[in-house]
Image (cartoon, rainbow, N blue to C red; front, side, top):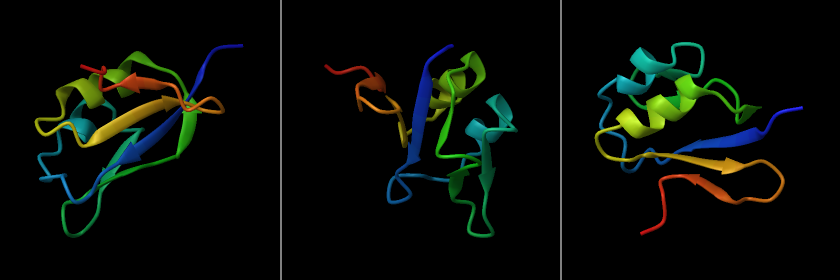
Length: 77
């Protein structure tokens, strides 16, 4: 069984670019105010969700391992 990720979007940082939806249309949606929301808070780890987080121009998306809380993205400095 693969890793599960907890997906969070900091809507105080989100600028509504829609890059997350472009990279992972099944993983994110924009609300009427163009704020990003994960379609599921916990999901199987996947390249498309990681690409969405990496592609966010303001790093509003945080991925952590479900259960342990270990940070997957963004990388710690």
